Length: 302
Image (cartoon, rainbow, N blue to C red):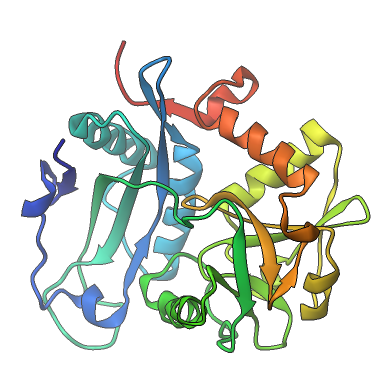
């Protein structure tokens, strides 16, 4: 099944969606991206885009930072994405990558006097972390201080360095600290600790992206399990003594952490709270839990 893209105001085969080598954002990181999951419900033969509007609301906030004049409204962005996904006609889990970017074919470090455009493409993508429980390591690469924390293309170089360092060392994922030495996030995920009946996660002021899945988990933990989430500084040493740890992200879903710095977490197994949240989340993203149907946008017309 071919993939399609919305590019230069048309839906075209993905392989035809090509950008000129002088395009500004390719050189200076002047783009804002999102990652949206489409989850296939085999019984209903329906593909559901999860929290579509929330992703585009965050993208529009990022566009404000980079002075990108988005040519589409929130409703139009959602409509375009549904149409491109439907055109691709996949019957499996997929990933949607929207990108707003400085599209002028002009070099020079700046945000002003540059045109902007939007594209989005769809492709099949299975689990981001190819493991049911991740082995992690605290990275030597720290998240930079005083950067605008949105999904800006130019910000992810440090995350890429951390990820490759971790994988090269035999681990699945990196845990990044911020410039002050507090835990920030994984290279592509938020992080949660379970300790003494409470969930703990770093606050936005410590550097992590405020993830859509992060917010989903906080809400589910409170509403469905009666567990409060505390947002506060997290010291590295706290990771080693946590009852449970898991990572969250659009690509990674909810991934248990079995080990950090060669120290086992929850005995190397999936903790009971993590397991409950995984089950809740897995049902919700394919619209099996109708209480949260508003989070799921169906792609195919019935």
